[in-house]
Length: 325
Image (cartoon, rainbow, N blue to C red; front, side, top):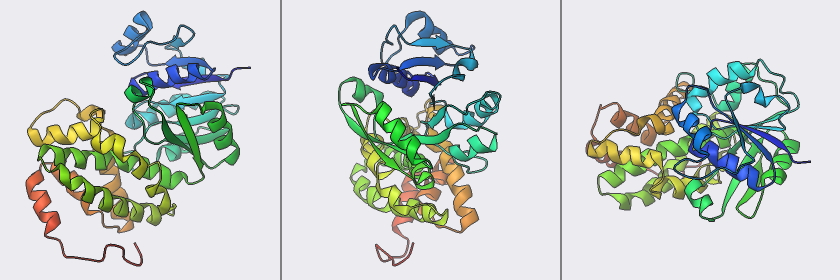
């Protein structure tokens, strides 16, 4: 029997999930609110700028499509998840595995997406996150990648990785929801930093950025009682190539345009709101995150990108690997 998977959010990433789930033999249902123009176009034309949906994929504006779904994959923007979770709490999800496929933190609270799900009363069979490197454009071109399912439930992680694994995506599993969710979200913030360097024509500094940024993210994860090693895995460092260098990365593009005076992608760059959430968390825990703090200052127009680079390089010298974070 094919699994039934409901994908909530049918943008770039969500439409890929519909395409991919269908390719591995699942019955796919895609949902978006009825007032989304891009979704109406997808319903009418069965395609967007990235792909054409298989005929078997069903599209609906009725959220009750989640009833009876074996897997509910959420691909809506992270800052919209709380509102969606309130609506989902009206349904019995006890037979469904909830999979959060976004990468972000709630900007006002710093809460992780799995925490928001529980806060808003969702009680699915399991809660997992699907993170790691990959752009739909590359997958659709046949370029494979490794990705990660993190969950408190070993059974759920195994069930999902076996159901969704293929020649295109090799899944690894993790029990560290904290480290994987923070790492995946923080990756978008570091992507903005990479774009800033591109905009300044200082791309050669990306090597130093790749070495130093995971250390401050690892300090945050450790302070939150997660496994700092997750930061050096697929959820964060493993996703750097797809975010710090890729022309498809919205976060990298946002940083580059910010330096050059452009606009138009801030609403699509999850790292903007995530940087606020990370500063909220680091302040509460007393953890120093100089790169993240600098990115936030640039976004808030408190300092120029060029001045920020100068300030970072004027900081006191230190051991690369202190004994403790």
